[in-house]
Length: 354
Ligand code: GLA
Image 1 (spheres, rainbow, N blue to C red):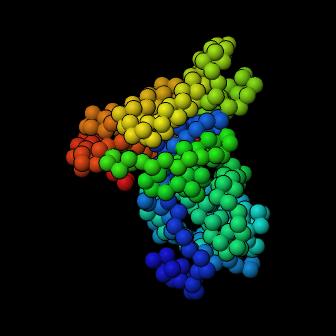
Image 2: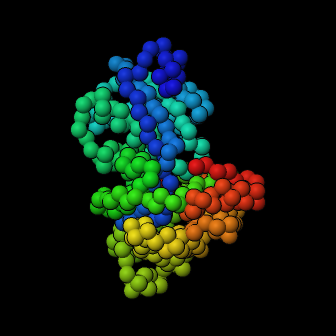
Image 3: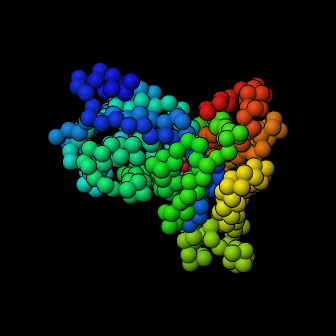
């Protein structure tokens, strides 16, 4: 129990506690900073956080499921440790009027580390929501998500979009969040009950802030200035053709954004209409686009996706920022056990997450 972890570490009880899920993105990758749609869902796995505000400027953080314990002053710079996200959340809760001073925090996680399932968004959103409860503020979840994104962009230095924060703040397991990342408007779409969106870790670990995510973002910036607009996802075929004076790498990056956005709209429609073969087809196309146009997959992950389909998934794709982490596959529930056994016996490094 999170209360016990908190009590054992700090010698008194927390004032608030809560659960925030991780997320898996079903489709719509690298569209959330290019004016497009995304379709993530919340996981059963996630983080439980307990907190008690402090009158001084100290932030103490303990965890079960992550290594280490940290203690630092609120205005100390990030230290490249997972606890930076928690301290960033307290810092920004202060900046946005939700909290004054520091805090003691305990975190317990059921999400595997380095899997790209948004444990960092779950920490920041989870803490901001607890700070909101404690302050009695009526700040809405979209604003909470925007603050959580600022923590990543400004404090951590990770130039991510807003998908992860919105997904963990708003979605529930069994529902997908069909989100317009530009307007920040969304629909919650029920996922089919007879199929499972299985998450399998490739065994290849990734670090988003290691630079390759940033590289893709900067390539998109080149496309944006050539187009004179920021919403690459919304361009027409004619506008894409008009980029022919750019190096072909940039044209492929633009094509991924444009086609991925359309696939995401198609996938949300397919879920609504319970047309799972179509959803599966779009997931496969999405993977191919990430492999060939956006170039963020790895050969081992391409193979895992190929085998996930060969062993009976309707569709499968790498999910998240790229260069490692998990795949997501749409599998009929009655076939799930056999599918899992066959896939994992061929891929010894991979493991089933949920
Ligand atoms: C990471 C980022 C998100 C999004 C995805 C790619 O998860 O945090 O904002 O860009 O990668 O779709």
